[in-house]
Every structure is written in structure tokens, then in C-alpha cells.
Image (cartoon, rainbow, N blue to C red; front, side, top):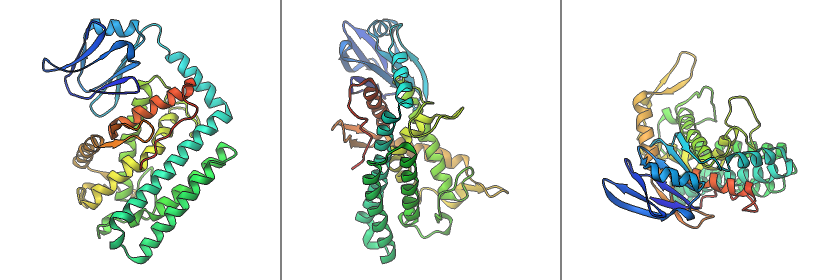
Length: 346
């Protein structure tokens, strides 16, 4: 059990939550693993097959504490909330902010700046850890891309409107993915990256990236729903029927840190091989079922890694970052934070 931003995260399989006086108690196999006063909580989020007593659910409903259940992989399953839940008010606030160009622009600037900063960190770490083994031209390309991404962070802060900010984000993507092949250290023609392709991916690296982005997207949508935000109404990504625009927004700042680094790790450690992919007659490259399973295991393992959250200044797991960022966004929209503190990995 962990507590962040007045929310309890129960990540142990088959945990049981019950009420004891004015406290919530988390038990595993009959043994108490943690407790917290109900009056200090805004929400309880359970991963996996956790259960809750009727008494606790009733107390949470009366105190306007939301209980959410997610699958072990982070997919949103259900939410229990009382009649006085503020989710409608939060969503109305979200919709008004999305329609307010000034408020939306401020959020978009922070998201894009964080994404570019995280892309820069991926390149910077590669130079730090493996730069000596790179050819001089590869080192120069990474250093140039790192500097250009630094300029993106500065420029986007001055973007006069969202369309301009989107254009700057597009430039950053070209710079970053233009240098991405230098991050692949294995000498294998099966894993050469010539540029980002999708719908369908046309090489193995893109197939792996697309799969990880899809998994991250599910996690982001679940995180947003668990705090009461509408995942379909975003700020950077325009509304489109059937598209989870806010989930895509949240993904942007997390892609380099969670998905890109894991893809590179799997390739460079030879945990994926050429025969883990198939090529269709039309040229689309797909992962095999066994490869998908292996990547999902690696994804769940990566989410257990601990980092220090840059805004909260607390030790958290990667798996909780999307939920914490969703909570921070909700707090900003409610007026509790002056700006949205997008996630910048250091």
C-alpha cells in the first residue's frame, strides 16, 4: 500500500480492504499491511483482485472518497462513488478549460516542454552511458539533437497559440526520431530504425514502439478515469469521435521515459529477436503472440522500478506516475495548483 496526494494505491494481489473505526485497513492473507485515516483520503485505487467490505464502501460513499478498481495491467474496471461525488463538477471544469484557449495553451506548453525534456534526457543518458562506444558522427548527431531539443523546451514556452505549439512538438519529434537509430546498439539489420511509421508499422522497431504506446495509452486512460477526468476531452489533441484525446495528451510526456526506454532496453539486451515479428503481405510488421506476452511482462516489471517524482519529491514507482499526473492535472483544473506540473524525468 502506498499513499500519494491523499490517495491510497493498493498494488498487492488479493488484498482485502475493511473499515476499522475511522480508518481504512489493508489486509493480505489475514495480516494487516497498512492503515490510514479516512478523513485524510480523497480516493482509493486498487490494482488486481482486491476486495472491499460493504462497511468500508459505505463509509467511503458518505465521505465522498472514490474507490476505483483496475486490472493488474492497469486497465480501468470499475469505480464506486457516493451521490455527492464531485466528478461532474470536475468534468465541467475540464470542459471549460478545454474551450478556454489561454488555459488550454498553458497546459499544452507544459506537456510539450516535458515531452521534449524527456526526449532530451533519453539522448543525454545514452551519451553518458554509451557515448564512448559510438562513432564520432553518431556522437555528434546525438549532441546536436540534444541541443535542438533544449531549444524546443525554450521555444514552446513562448508559443502564442496551440497550433504553433503543435508545430514545435512536430519538429521535436523529427529531431528525436532522427537520432533514434543511434540509440540501438545491437548490430542487427532486423532492428534498423529509419523513421517513425505507424498504422501500420513497417519495421520491427516501430512495431515494438506502437505496441508499447498502445499499452501506455490504456494505462493513461485508466488513470484519468480513476480520478474522474474525461479521457476523451484533451488540450493538445483535438476532439475526435472515439479518440481518447486527454489520454493521448498524458501519454506525450510519458512516452520517452516509459515506452521508448523500454523498447531500447529490450532490443539492446536482445530480449526481442527478429523472429518475434511477422511481416504481412502488405508490409505491415506485427509482433507474435509470445512476443507480446514477453513485452507485457517486461512492461509490468518496468512499472515496479522506483524513481523520485520531480514535483512531489517522493519515491514512487513508474507504474503510479500516470495516476499521479492525472491527480495533479485534476488539482490544477480545480484551481488548487497554479499550473499543471507535467512529468519531467531527471
